[in-house]
Structures are given as structure tokens and as C-alpha cells.
Image (cartoon, rainbow, N blue to C red; front, side, top):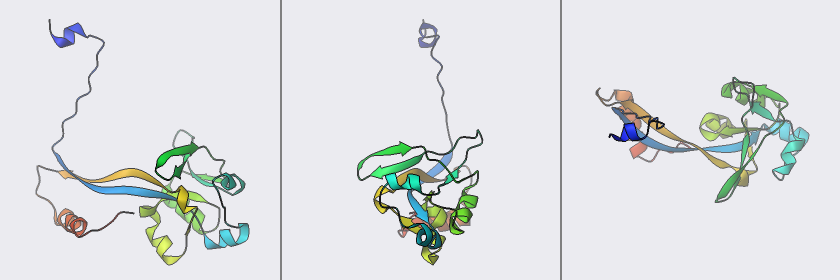
Length: 163
């Protein structure tokens, strides 16, 4: 009797890939706001303070929102659902709303790197920042690497950081 016949309730899911994959790092997710918003409303001092601020949330297609994750050093993160002043289904729209002063958001640093550098957004509560998703570069192995992929791999080898 075969393994599959002995275990008919077993439903394996098997995946094969012929893609190349390169780990780029993991995103860093921070709390941020515009300088004008912080001037008008003050700077939060703790995670508990954020419930008193306008929150700019990311909304999923099913109507729910992304739960905010609060870092605790090397400890596991705490998840908290937040009430939003505005809920947007686009990360770029979230960035725009925060820049014009709608409130505080939790965003990945790769998404707002330029805004942070220009001072349009300011990181708040840096001790509560968390690691986000791991980021990978994926390409078909069956094809030669394109010049763009070659250039990106060169940058990575020279020490480019995502966060």
C-alpha cells in the first residue's frame, strides 16, 4: 500500500521553481508624521499616546485595515488595531495623506526614504519600529540576467541597504 493510499486525508501542496532569488534584506516599518502635523498636535511619547492622534491607515480590499505592529526591542512585537481618521487602499495615497498633515502612519522606510531625506516626513517613536517583510529579487533562471538585474546585483554586492 502506498503512502498516499494509507493517508487519503493528506493534501500535499508542492511547488517547484526555476527562478533565481536574491535576498535584499527586510524592510523597516516606522511611525511617521509631517512636521506640520507634529507642530500642530505635538509629538507622541509612547505607543499608548497614538490612540489620541489621527491615524492614517491602510485599508484592505475586504474593508479591514492593517493592524499596527509595535516593536519591543528584541522581544516579539505587539499587534494593535487602530482607529483611523482616514483609511486608504494605496500605500502611495497613505504617504500623500501623511505629508499633507492628516496624521500619523506606520510605513515601510523603502516607501518613504525620499520624504524622510527631504524632511517632508519625520520618524516618531523610533523604539517602536519593527522589521517588516523580507525583500527578495526574483528572476527567471532560464533567461540570461538582464542588464537591470546585473546592475542591481552589483549595487547589492557593494553594500546597498533597503532600510
